[in-house]
Image (cartoon, rainbow, N blue to C red):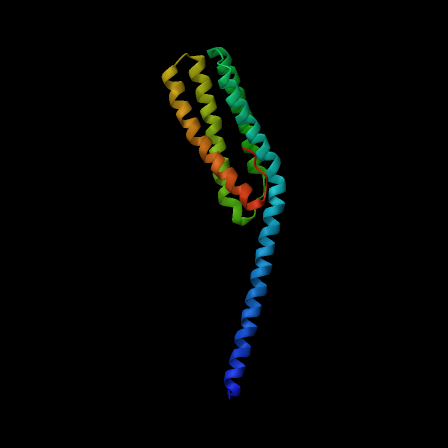
Length: 160
């Protein structure tokens, strides 16, 4: 037979587990709701970023002249600066703040890379254009990784 003391301890233990379980569910739901709400605001910005980057790929595939490339890449730099401003205007939950900051920084670097490519094309400097293109690829991967991580955590649909 169990002592009254053992039974009381067991009841307290089960009560504590129940409180922890409820607290965990409530905390999980709140974060999930916040993430989903943020995902709705993030979705259009994500589409805007993908649209710019798709346009970059199409512009490069068209093999423009240096003058055309300078003009197009200067335009991409401006569009990416706008995307960065939209990212910076978002109000992410604390669980996503670091990722959103990473994305913003990467998009800022992409905009700078585009300006460097435009300047290199304008001044006919292929070595400078190559160096800026290497940076563009690196920064594009960083932006893509942060964007995918945010989409995954918010349930936002991402298309390749």
